Length: 154
Image (cartoon, rainbow, N blue to C red; front, top):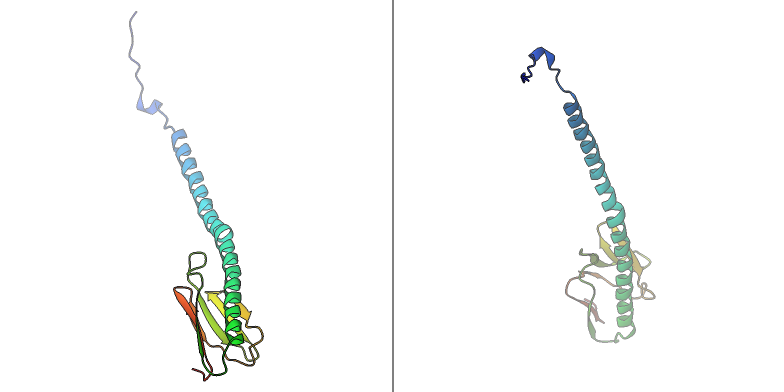
């Protein structure tokens, strides 16, 4: 038995398009899935991370404002007719890993403590002393904070 070599002519060989279509299909599907994943990452960040962090910050700001308002009213209640009171206190350095600002504002008819970071804020009324004593000042969460009262004013 004689073995004959198999020979092909160039014209007999048809180009294989199956490998090319599989590659294009793989690249197309991978590109679409990558685009959907990027869009999902932006949505997940906003819905599952920023939303709850902002809600936490609002409630923390309300608690901080209530604490400062209480301290101001306490100073007012024990304020001497002639003298000075100086009180140091500490509030959280940050809320949800970010800084914030505290400011005493006069809204015309009422005094409020505003705790703010960006567009998240909380206004807390200073109960009972808005008309009789003017409260001014601002601070941040870092370090020790002071409330000072002087009967002659500052």
